[in-house]
Amino acid sequence: EAQVTQNPRYLITVTGKKLTVTCSQNMNHEYMSWYRQDPGLGLRQIYYSMNVEVTDKGDVPEGYKVSRKEKRNFPLILESPSPNQTSLYFCASSLSVYVGQAYEQYFGPGTRLTVT
Amino acid sequence: GDSVTQMEGPVTLSEEAFLTINCTYTATGYPSLFWYVQYPGEGLQLLLKATKADDKGSNKGFEATYRKETTSFHLEKGSVQVSDSAVYFCALSDGPSGGYQKVTFGTGTKLQVIP
Image 1: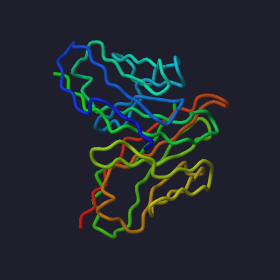
Image 2: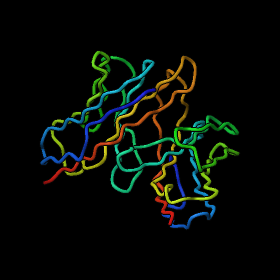
Image 3: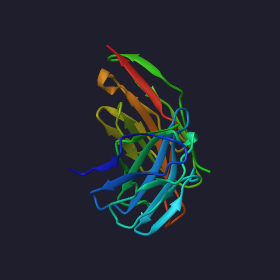
Image 4: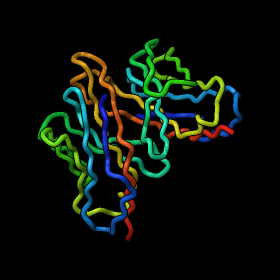
């Protein structure tokens, strides 16, 4: 089954304790992205990756890191989480994202993170 | 920059009522337009899309028409069901010729359908 998986689904942590949220897709997609969803703000892009070893900042990258060493995986790293990073996080992938190609994005089930 | 504006929610309708969720956009280029749906506890999934002016996207009884003159992509359904209760996101993708196509999402509109 074609899917995007994320782990963990729920995480409660404390300020400053490094954490990683994993994301994996089995569709051989080139493009992957991380979003955070907050009430009243919709989805905001954190980082994206056009392909292996190619990553770039989205709209709200501060406090986050990513890496893309393999095509299928795109982990999100919070080196020193803070309470304002409490949010619902989604990983997404797409075949491509070049102009002229309206490919849909496939989303993971989400990771609800609480930082106390 | 590009932006997407959706009507405020929540929208509460009785079963079999007509649904309209308004969406307007601003874009520097000639974007593709999407509606995504998020059911409770799940990620977003594509509902429908349109890639050029006057295109109509449709799926599961939902429709939306790409209106370039009014920069709108309103979502409609003739008769909603309880199972349509979800959050609906309007989105666009746009970018420079030959380049990366950034996706911009609206804030989402929550729909609640009561029996």
